[in-house]
Length: 95
Image (cartoon, rainbow, N blue to C red; front, side, top):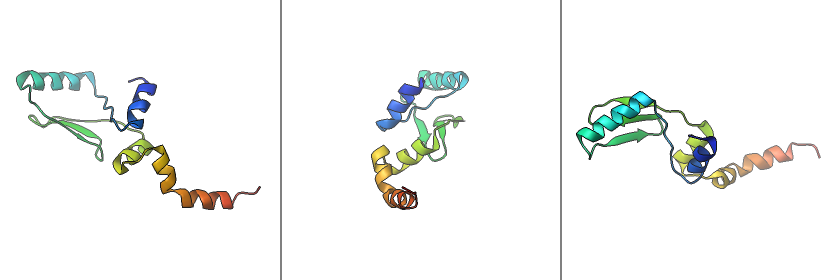
């Protein structure tokens, strides 16, 4: 994915999972065999699994975006969640 597309997806709560070309072929084969095939995306473990075969691949995600998605936060929610830390940091800074 292009960085802007990936970030836009993450900002609206859509998890863009990028897999290898080989794994994508496995996914296509599973869907051809069964149009109702299921995929399981596990964000905490950062894996995607073809349920029918158990075939699994890992994916990367920015740790900050992962934490936000796991907690249901957007950027504003994150800042509100750490507002005391921000106040403390700001209070310790010389003017």
